[in-house]
Image 1 (cartoon, helix red, strand yellow):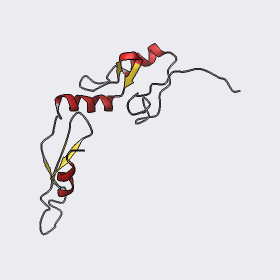
Image 2: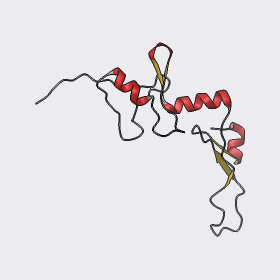
Image 3: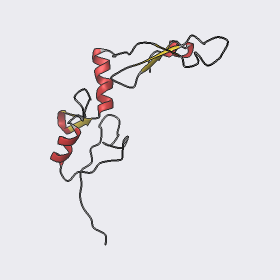
Image 4: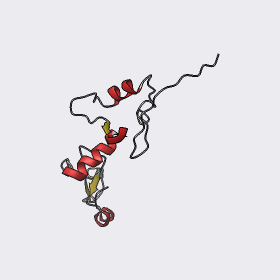
Length: 119
């Protein structure tokens, strides 16, 4: 039997991602209220959630993280040495990398990254 049912999906108005597509799969909700309650509630206390913004628009957690970093600056982890160190090479490359704790940005001391800056 085939049944037609209406449902609600949450889509980020900035990047176009659907809620859940980067995890276990897109989630479908019975109502707008159910969707908003779920997507705007972080699973852990220090985790970002989706944000409902003016005009009924939505911003996903990743776009919200980028927005916060643009506004307040990145939350950089300490520099880490390249993984080639200790691999039995005659010299290590001397490169290092660091990651933002809030958004997916990275920085590297590699010369190709110096020209372009943080990602």
